[in-house]
Length: 312
Image 1 (cartoon, helix red, strand yellow):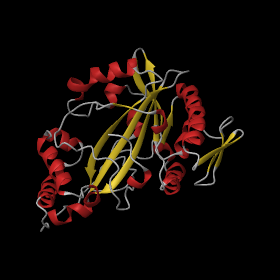
Image 2: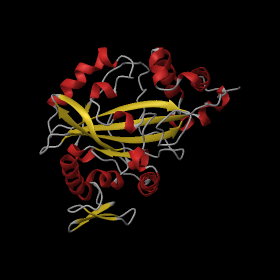
Image 3: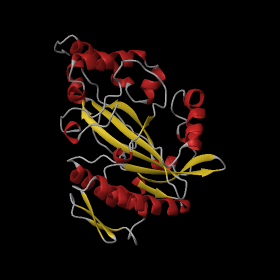
């Protein structure tokens, strides 16, 4: 599945979903990694200014929840900022330009000194683009999270993950240890700087907010007739690349949130998503926070598959 154009990437304002990871209608626990073209590393669209304004508010008001960096993150963060400051004006000249030692964001009017940054370099990276950034460093052969600028967590807290290795971070994922852990470890060990990769992760939630470190305390019941307008497809476009100098791995997360009735706009899409939900293990649906409204969601999808309206 190739990255799509900006016109196809209208997210939470009711446009079509940029990615539909449920296409095919079958559940499979797999890495799903694909080759990433260098120019497709960062995705920029017309929501850049609005999304960065929301990020600025989070950095100002909830800094400790969206940013963390261990001392060993300093060198890779500097390398990442240098890489990003070169990549953005070259591949996204409509949105960024380089002015000597400063990188100018045309959408926001901000200008950042990338040679002597006033903030932690990793935080500046997070303030430049819509992606979140995680820095993974090797420790005795095991990669662990040493830094992150994370403004769109999907019901996990950065404070619970910083400093932990990949296996511990993914311990709550049903089936991870048996089906994925060894594959992930091999991928991290073999990843080359010139061969970045990307994948998709997704869920359906009852809240469109990008920043969701914890689930809702008391989820509201959803009637089948309301599922399309009350639920949201949340897709994470994730990339992984190794920094050539420090050897750390940069994990980016770009989050797209689309109201369900816009994301599932055809009978075919509804049928595929319904089939996947019926195929997925109960533990996976619970982990993705879908279980509380699964019945209403399936009823809505079945009606959409048949081209009919949905009644409560």
